[in-house]
Structure formats: C-alpha cells, structure tokens
Image (cartoon, rainbow, N blue to C red; front, side, top):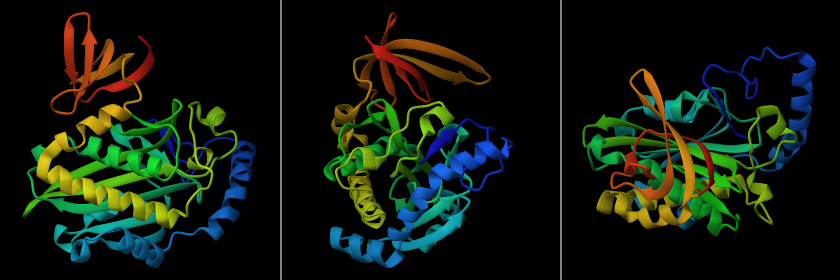
Length: 308
C-alpha cells in the first residue's frame, strides 16, 4: 500500500531506515507478509504488459518500450535521467525505495501491496503549455479504474485518487524541455492490496483497490490499461489542451460544492483560504467562492473539507 509521508519523516517501509523499536517494525512487516505470498502469484512481467498493451492500443511504432525492475529508487527519476531521444517508455517496479509524491512527500510501498510505474513521452508543446497535465493524468487513471469495476473513485484536486474520503493513489508529473517539445514523465502509484492496521499506523485514511472491486485484475493488466488510457488522453491534450478533460474532471471532483480550507505558500509565507469549491479555473487551478468573490488558486493544498 502506498503512503505519502511528510518530507523528512521516515516510516521505514519499502527499504527505508526506521528509528522505531524493532518490535513495532516486526508487527508491521508481519502484517505485510501475507501479501508477499499473493505477489508471487501476480508478479509484474514485461512480456505480459507488452501483450496486454498491444491488444488495447493502436499506437504501433509509437507504443512505449516496456521494462520491469524488481526495485529502484524511483521510476520517474530513472526515466527522466535518460535521453528524450530514447523514445516513449514505460517502467514498472515491484519496489521503489525513494519514490516521491507532490510537494516532496515520499511514496512508500511494501512489496506486492501496490502498483508503481512511470510513463515517458515527448509532447509537441512547450513546457508552459503542460500545466493541465496533472488533471489529464488523474482523469485517465480514475476513469480506467472505474471502467474496470472499481466503485466510487473520485479526484481530489489536482489528481489524488480517492474513494469514500480515503486515498487510493496519486500521480506525479515531471517535465523537461526537449529538442522537439517537452519531455513528460507521469508516475502512477495505486494501492492494490490492503495492509492491516495501516490507517492507525500512518494516521490517515487509505483504501486499496481490492476493497473496491469484486475481483482484482492482474497488476500487468492494470499497468497496460492505465498506460493505454494515459497515451490516449495525452494525444487528446496535444490537440485540445485542458478542455479535452475539463468536464470529466469536474464530474469526478471529490470536493465539488464542499467548503474547503486550503493552504497557499507565497515565498516564505504560508496563508490559508476558505471557500466553497466551484470547479476548475480556466488554467486548471482550483476555483473557490470566498467571501470576497471567486478566487482561482494554483499550487494550493487542500487541508480540510466539509459540507457547505
């Protein structure tokens, strides 16, 4: 299961050091051990992902080169380190030891509990034109999981995957200028299998995909389905920009019409704004109706939500 830990905090999962007593760590890994048996029956496999992706798409020569590694620091970091000339690529890992989320948070995933992969592609646009990509990727992931039978999946701005107020997964977008456009790497992390006592240990609500579906598909099929949706929506984004998915995102908005308290960082200063969520601003920011009128917020972090 994936956890977004605060910067600087180390929960000791996924190969990271841990200062907690050995007895506490032993109980945690004892809870994870049943998952290890299940991952042996559902390992990530390059050939199976390639076959499923080929059956789902018509990208032909533009299909990404698929790789699976047992462990790595970060799938995003590895793909970013390679030349853009290497072409489209998909990299999946059983374990990430230094995975990252938004705002520098660490992503932690015990072996077999989650699905972590990154997709790299060069877009025919400038870096400044990619600001809506997090929303596009969130919609692609949420819609795919819903189509596979996962119930109640929504999006918390900009692209946290949620279900019933609990976090299911997240998306990290990173970009670099490229000779013929912008190099884009999209990292996806999804909780596939539940780890007992997780919510209490990590002090946040989390949910796993197996809790939302009657039958959990193989992780290889999940990777292929999600990658195919991302590739399709990236092409739509190149043609139409954010408008290609605006209506879909707003239909999936977990906090639509709710009163939100958001935190904004302005240089070294942090301030809070409260208002009722109205949807997306023209540039993809979060739009709130406040006492002083409509405000379009970019770079905000939602810290609480309640009924308006």
